[in-house]
Amino acid sequence: MASNKRALADCDICGFTYPHRIMKFNSYGMLVCPDDHDGAYDLKNHPQNKSTGSKDDENIPDPRPDLGDVYVPVTTTDWLPT
Image (cartoon, rainbow, N blue to C red; front, side):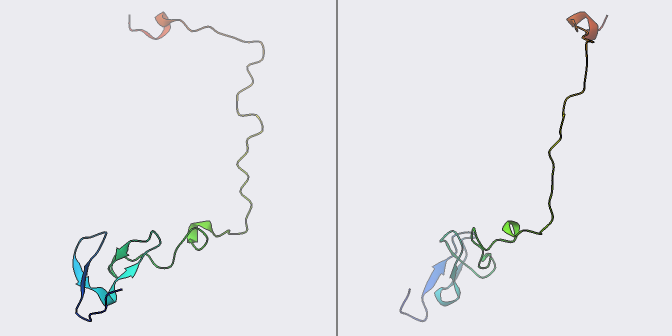
């Protein structure tokens, strides 16, 4: 840290110059201004990593339609303009 109370530092995100005493390190280790500081988030403390407690089962048992024995071959003349 800077020992002089008038020391200045550049924000690693926006590039503006601020007094060094108000600068903070973000979760990526960058020295940033208070406007660009993202709080105390890290991989464990991020809101998107918190569980809501509900189970979200998105598995589809049979995702393909059952065609059975019906198979219709598609040729290029079926979709080309005439």
